[in-house]
Image (cartoon, rainbow, N blue to C red; front, top):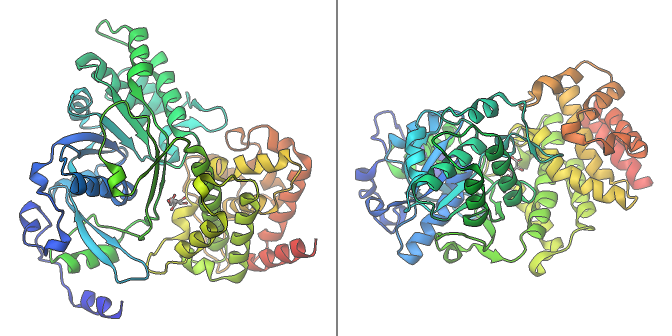
Length: 514
Ligand code: CS2
């Protein structure tokens, strides 16, 4: 690492040319894809062109094309909220670099799977044409939990959402579910060839959920031009499949340091590099209605039952991640790796994993104890600067899926779920008390921030009650579980006082003595 930093310091990218197709052939062979990107045709659409897609599906698709020689899987990638990434990608022929950082020396290469990038709300006609093309048979999505605009408790679209309401009336759609429904409508009208819609977000039973949301939208959307709504709906249920998949790779948001390092590695400037860890997992259900890339050649695992893999990932990895993020941010740690060096936080992380693991079935002979160790090792990767505040974002959308489902299961068995409860308590203190151990205010970056922040300034018990009232997070069962609410209030009270790390230590001591 030392010499890399040194070389980075020496690199002045101010006047460097941008990465481009013509720059690509001047790079060392090891950095180039094994195919000429000009030969790729667009075979799939991706909604949500954030760092995760660029470090996961786009990379495995590239490897699948390299291994199979089938070059029909170029991606038309769309962003939903801002035009920034598509514009930057287009300015460098949609090429970008991927840095993989772990124990070994970092490995860099260029990813060329994305062939076009658009800002969906403004460039809808291009997406609509792609949806209708028989050459395109796949749509993948990574739009994060909040992108689906649904209520995780009822699994219904959030009908109060203004964007959804406007999309239902028939404007070029801005919501992802609106884009899928209108895009599928375009396909039904144009060629009616089968299509696969593959959700790659951390949701529970994502395929079925997404199919349900799309059908709910179709049932209410305005239709024009003599569209037979029920024939369209039948076509969706017969010809469009929504397989389940579990994706896993830690991909922190890249910043200036990553751009400088990518520029130094390539000798060309790259404004949208991604940096990730060596680990990469993709578990998929084989229900594809139409052709797909040969991802199995790139290490993807096809199984009959994805759900147990999803539960293991959400509860052992994501729930633990959130717990470390809230406890870490409260204690003033910038990164997940730094937070894990704090003994009390590490102990809490080990405990929540053990607590959840005791109720999990291990899929495909996976050894859950080894899995837990490897997750902690991955979190401890100091070469990735994964900020606690990044993982802390969108807690209202994440906790129901990664923590509360498992917590409910434990409560049904009469178990208090002390550490899953601690994940909820640390989130409540993060949101409501809102200050870290060094006196910095903690930002609540969450689609429900306006409501969550009503708890700020209240006393611990009142703040807990205020937040528990939010049915779209806690349902009606948890707030009525008085024994559990008492435990939650007790933990919130302990964590509330500054320094938070002392509160955590006393809670852990109390639990060890119990
Ligand atoms: C993280 C995930 O930001 C978060 O909430 O827990 O993005 C996590 O890094 C990925 O799911 C790892 O696959």
